[in-house]
Length: 103
Image: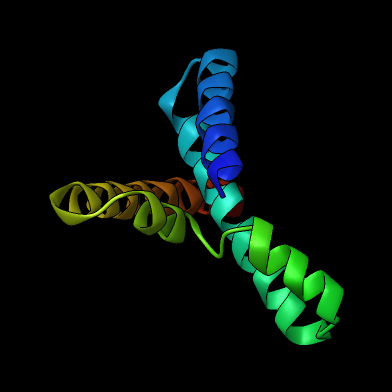
């Protein structure tokens, strides 16, 4: 699971440097979290033991599970609140995009 944390941090830095705006990082985090959740839902639905073991071992169930695995105490609480605020920010962006498309 340590590789997942390293890859996430490197990917966030690359997205931030490449796109040079905070909105892209928020979108990236939303996409990653949804992808993690979809992988775990998929293995729950298809029930192939080898695939289930691989996904369970190497892919976290969500960004919150990554935070919970690597932090404790007040740091964990702060990081979870930051993630929650980023989810709200992501939702606002999605709603704004949806409203623009309706016009």
